[in-house]
Structure formats: C-alpha cells, structure tokens
Length: 62
Image (cartoon, rainbow, N blue to C red; front, side, top):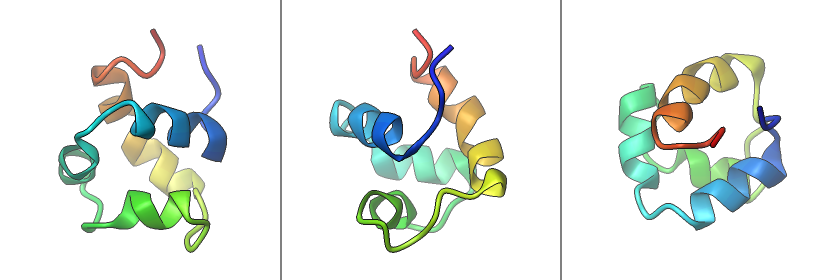
C-alpha cells in the first residue's frame, strides 16, 4: 500500500485528469487539491481520511 504524502498525491494527480471529480467525491472545495500540490494548504489527517477512499476507488494503491 502506497503512503499518502505530497509527492505520491502529486504524482497520482498528475496522471489523472479528474482532480475536480476527486474533490467532489471527497467533499472538498474546488481547487483544494491544487492548493495542496502548491503547498498553499497542508495535507491534514482529516483531508487524508476524506481522500483515501476516493483515491483508492481511482486506483491509488494499485
């Protein structure tokens, strides 16, 4: 299982053209993932808990 951190998240998102869909499904505001990528927002434990189920759905841990 891959560890979720800024680098693995950025790599995953760079290869997936549906960041907005992930934000929507995870209940995050529009542009939130881009802010994490630009280090304008931290990747908190609360955000990880919202993101991981959605990212796994899209193949993050495969």
